[in-house]
Length: 613
Image (cartoon, rainbow, N blue to C red; front, side):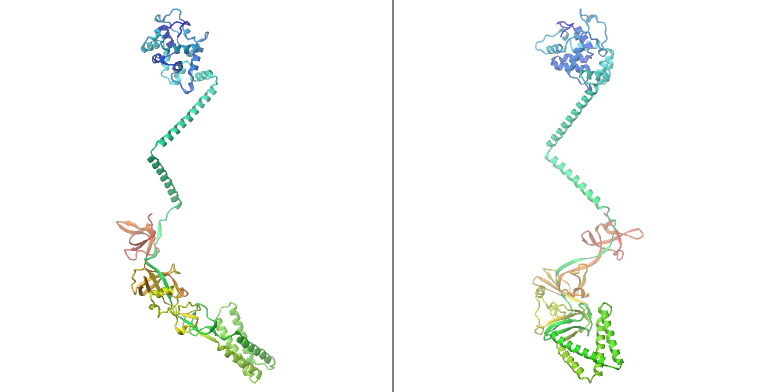
């Protein structure tokens, strides 16, 4: 290091003065001595830090810029600015150096200052006299040269200390930095903001990388637990969403009637109390009664035409009748005298004919009776006509031909009439003779199984070759043959059970056990049904369920409430009051239960009970 512009070593007094002019504290002076082992660049950086106490983001300058600024301050002819102000104090006698000039030692270019710093690190460098002092002595020397205003600046914030140490405000310091960097103050602020943004992005990347490394370093168990927690949270959200969609739940329900019991399923055959009518040599049938209607004794059911009957015979009969009608019109036209009786009979026939026509066209009335009245009117007119013209030979011959042809036809046509009050049906299945109330209890399980499969029983010799024409079914009760496979159940004879046939999905009937037989791995139960035969009029085989049913009260399971260890339901009265009713739970069916009130008569269908969700 040079002093006074010459290649001479500095005295200790010059070192103390230089330290004082640099506005260093005693601690800073001690640190300066400790930096003698630094590189030139490190030393320059340390000097820049000492000039600013603590470099802030807005104060940041490079060490090279700090060294350049120092060199600029020592240029010849420059007056030290006020912010560099070190009070000009009289030089103490112990600091007097002949020929020394204050501030001259600063007049070195940046290259010489850096070279001097490098010499302090060179191996074997000679220790100067001013260096042969302890850190405490150097600190004392710096304290002697420290202005009072520097002591006051130590109590300021770091960013203000640097500006105050230079005698500038923060705004002046920012302007000076911008000038040193060749920028305007606004550009300096933008550059500093950009540096801060870059630093923030870099910090964010570093945090992200640290989180990634932390996740990678986690154990397998922790990852499984985290995944499980996420799944549970998602399921909770789904459940909450579904519950919100369901809306509010009902708070009460109505007591319903229900049926419960043990069910036995099997194949059933229907046995009706019916009589089938058949005949031999049947060619065709002319039905008069309506299918499924109730007929009474003596009602004409149908006309049966036997073999040998042909339409030619009817055509011949109609031809004779047309000839009689034409000849009668001829005789009536030749009458000169008025015949009052004939006129009345003719009017009666026309009137009855018009009545029949009106019924055919849809008017309400009994068509069969009206046709019978018309036939009687026609017969009366014919009798009177034959008696009036009995002497006419041609007319008599025509009447004789008609009668002969009619007798021939009547031998081929048989009239069938009902023998009892019953339901008539013209549909038969061939089991009517075998499945009768007198015979059905004699069949074994194997025989019933064969008939259920379509095998018809053999007919008696007297019935062979006959054609079934119609059947008359008595109204009232019927029977059922029920086959149950592999059943260990033993029914009780005389006991009434609930029977449900496949067509009666919502209806059950009472069926009494007449008898039962177990054979060939099947149980045959013979049942008598007390009910109308109409629902099974056209049914012979079906699937059936036989159960030991019991009627009970049915409520939702959420209606059951426990009070003092007693289960019951809370009945809602019309006046708004609520009453706890103890009950017995008979059975459960899905989300409903069958109950029976312990006290008879306090619960019934249609009443409302409270629900507890």
